[in-house]
Image (cartoon, rainbow over all chains, first blue to last red):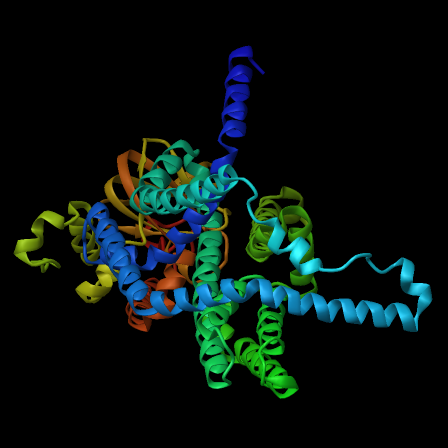
Length: 351
Length: 172
């Protein structure tokens, strides 16, 4: 490799390293752009300029968010405030229960004593006392969230507005003979990712709404917060529904007057939502965008969680699907080329 | 005359490229009979690429994954023979080629080479399939037009020839 080219690659790598903090906002912006792309395609079909369509779309989203904020915001803020106020008392209540269980275990099976954690008040120590200790930390967290809230729509806006131009530039750089196959592979993957992301969000919305309605009907406190959590957690395969059911169960256990019957109702509700999701909602929302074998699905989620934590679990399924689809398309391409070579083989004519 | 999709007071927001593309596609025999609304949706799925003379669009035996429509310039469709490439057809603006890629997975039956500087519109099979899923009317019209083209080639008198006959150059 020539020294100039080596230097250029080195400079690019250094730049990529410096800009690594932009990976998460870019990833989330791409997901947002996939989510909104059908609306832009609809405007394209009406021959509306991209810049006008995307600007109008973002103005519409801001209007919807403000309206939803006005409608649901006060309720959610009240629930959140009440939960925060009750949090120290709830933590003490959980700790008392946990301490009792540990003591009981230690008395009934002295051999386990060494394995059991010492001390008490785990929830207070590990959850409540882990908040930002310094005012500087708090500002850093808030600043980071604020930056994400600005960067994600900013990148999504330009992705939606200029993606077709970027594709045109890339197509002009590709050797003409390879344009058909290489862009075809990208178009197929683009379709799979788009359908998956839009399906996942729609699925989360339906599951969240069902959970909120069900919890409200069952008389469980904080139905809006728990429903929102169930919808958000739903994007994490396998673990998400378990976490949302556990959170709702915990709230029921700690609510006076709910008892075991309340826990049973919550378990039944989340079981019914899961069955409904797997059999009716997902086939309509995510549908045929994912063709992964269940074992591969589980494996990808485990690998994703080890590599990138919760984010890895969320992106594991689309990444595994993209890898599987790429391998399938490349194998198909090789098979067609082999068929062509066989047809042009002079020995074959003799045979 | 092709109907304007936007009212006059919204003319400033119109995309001139899309405004031209849909009526252009309406003139192509493959998309004849599609209503304006569906032509508009179809037009958004096309990619445009500039080609230079001598550049190969695809080669005989390549996997077929897209349909091409000539916007500008000319494209030669050739087939390899023992004596060298044989020109089956020369296509100009409005002509479509590679249309069989939209309905099957067989390799290309001929080579497409750009003869004069031009622009091509490219429609990928995956995009066409996605469009058909939501609009059976598009599938019906395009496949009916394609069947007509295939029927015309099939009805031609069989000719025994050692060289490919340009008159028998069918869809690719």
